[in-house]
Length: 618
Image (cartoon, rainbow, N blue to C red; front, side):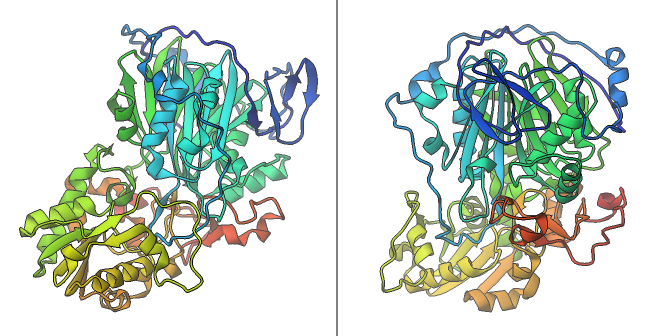
């Protein structure tokens, strides 16, 4: 059921794509027919082709013959409201000179887990651009701005002459793309993705955006989030004949779109999303449309902006808009679908009835860049206030305040300003850490941390030091940092953590360990202090955090702090963010337990969660 259905349109300028071909990594969906070099082929497995045109069959085939037409499609025309402000699309973009034409094609690099960051990891960031002649290049730059959300793989899909062209690769954005590859992604519409995986290596086939063909055309998708009912949906689809090429929950969405009988295309997305549970901020691209969608709870961020030439931009954070000179307009609302095309401009559809939003509080604590505006709030201002609260709630006599860079810096500035003690750089982070290291045969204690962080003895020697960090997950890295600071001569080390204790694993798109591995779930604050070896330890009080958020406090998800989940996982095991250890292809689902973590204890998998749960619980 859909609670509301209201459209508005904004005209965009004409599109003038030019023809080009490039290799596409293609995810096969049933009964799709392709022309390859003039020959008709039926392909049962994934493959690489040089050009693709989807053959529209007269009689479509459905995996689920009992799927009903979405009733939304029956009354659309009477529900449109049209607004058509004028705008134009420029044919010239100054960023073309940014790229080096002679940069060689990078080889994929696989990144070992050589440093225990001991931090929650954001799965990915997404970008979508419509109506700019250099859409893929703008997408490339926007992905650079979102690189902090994922460093293991990147990809861009562009649309040119009704053909979806894709480049994906393992590594950083600058590793994957160069001038040669970007020149083979022409067109005025593109989507992009950066990802993080938990496995020791990132499999190329799991790097998004995904591109697939179905009976009415082709579709590309980039997804930020995690589906808590992925395993159930995948099993249902496989029972009905679907073939999966990856271990990503995003591929489920493509299959659901392919089997939907709803019309037009964006209603197929609505139909698919009605079956999804969990967190998803997604951008889709077809031959003529760009679509952005956010889950009804709004767990993960997604914003909309516009460039001066009228191009529409969607991104996970506003920092991506800033880099490509797009003006922030608004968030994509929880439960909303935004459809952009040449004919109708921007159309807004309320996707699903949505309860009170449950936005991820960790975006403000750790994930987002300080210069971003997330969920309508400045990330910098939030973190500065977190530091001020810590100074008020947990003061201590000290000579200097330092941060664990980079995520602890703004909170440390707030702490120092509140107590009137100078902030200094007591730890210097190396931004040039390579991908592989040869450790000497004589083992170096805390080798991984020393590669990344270097203490400044002149700042620390003989001082009472307050160290501000954003969070403690397992506690292993914190203990090494304390030891590093004391070895540099610090007289006292007082840890201040700009978040409440993390006691619950996240199932909405953040890679966190199981609850059993979380140190705050196993130890008291005093026991943690003893474990990491500091002289005092204090966390941001939970009630003070909520008080600081004021009237917005009920709009955030605090599951990692409270263990109370707005959307409870209904499966005994819940998919971990990223790749399965064996990529999910070497055996049945039951054999890939390494890719799953236990759901919260005492889950009644048969019981539906009360829809008022999020209003009655923290």
